[in-house]
Image (cartoon, rainbow, N blue to C red; front, side, top):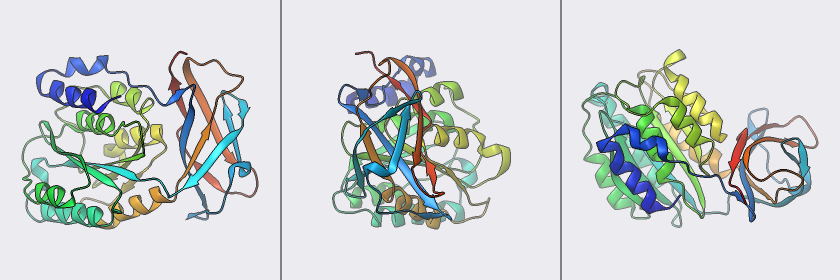
Length: 287
């Protein structure tokens, strides 16, 4: 999915939600290989120092040979997708803006970030850039109003971050359920299974209201942090970025499996009782 296509999708969202159903990005699973972001923890703490031989990767049940493992040495692209509906007025908006600035200031010089906001509509405020000053200015100028188009925004954030190089982290903040999207949850989840990025959610709510965020993050190997209605998202944003940097990047060239269609993934560490968090599968392009 090229950046130009991502921009076309964002424009289409302003005109018709129906256009979104035609977008079918493809997870990087062609002849050059498959890339998987994997988090390995033991007792809640990230496990470091693992190599290719430590991982058992199965593609549709068939063991694969891991070609490369890297950890934290690849530039990161962070797409911030922030809820600016009317419920975020006043002190809650200020808290969110400060949290966003804190996340931006934690980025490395080689990293990039983008800013999308959503209420009744989805707005791309800043495309992917390393200009932190521009991002900070756009974030602090934001105002809260309108309804909540969470599903549209999640789809737009995933497409904007679906780049060919680097690693993409999509951080979605929302304080409620969707009330205004054109897109169905099924379309957004289908896209989550095809894009390359990892989606994390920060939910200023709890229980069933965070269901969509839990589904879309699980599809990419991420997770949701619930902070409560009055919680400060700043610590959650930093925790997500730090956790993402500790994820391993595994690559392998699929062998013994058909190229096209849905591929179920199973990733585990060969020894110990470590917990592995990764996407459950991917859609492969036909050769």
